[in-house]
Image (cartoon, rainbow, N blue to C red; front, side, top):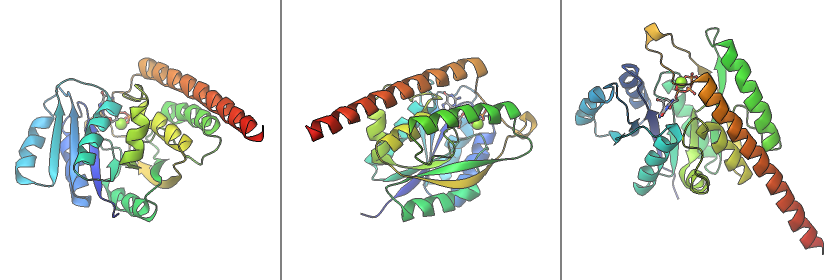
Length: 251
Ligand SMILES: Nc1nc2c(ncn2[C@@H]2O[C@H](COP(=O)(O)OP(=O)(O)OP(=O)(O)O)[C@@H](O)[C@H]2O)c(=O)[nH]1
Ligand SMILES: [Mg+2]
């Protein structure tokens, strides 16, 4: 069956950057769907106007904020209903390059069963603390996936096979907030989904350039710590299960 790709952008209070990101994405791909995750900054008003003139742009509005993973989930369910097989998910805040969309989707078409993962190339402006912090997450993910070849678990510029991701999200009530990006790739790898990494430049925009981040160091690092705890426990349970199956097989 032929694959059908859309671009899916979750957005929470992204300010004026949102419209710019959506325009750049639309120049690179159609269709583009935006899930406005209970934003209160009015950033969806210009978008709703843009929708009038662009049938390839769709906006899904959630009335209350539910988190990045939950916003992506809403978009995936609607996209599957509409017959899409794959979603390129990108952030709304200008950090991910729309110029990279074509190459990511081409890689996905060449390997439709795989997840296509952006591997970040940081510029000099990237905060050191974020670069160092993600090394811990990447190290833990290598243990959790026993070296499935995932270069970066936190970078959210990716193409997912929709059905495979929905299967993973259906099985857990987690992955609804900032734990979405890392947990999605670890669980997909556990299910045998291969990873293709595409080096991708990432930009950290200053507030003057319209850069916004809702990452809270304490709250979100605690959330990530709890996520890695359950993934390590999940990995140990899987290994014990496999060992038992192996034992039963030999008996
Ligand atoms: N933080 C946050 N982001 C959301 C939420 N819902 C959707 N998003 C979107 O998810 C994407 C990632 O959020 P960011 O706050 O930029 O997080 P990040 O890119 O991991 O962190 P930075 O590197 O500091 O920018 C953006 O497109 C957000 O608009 C939510 O409830 N909280
Ligand atoms: Mg961001």
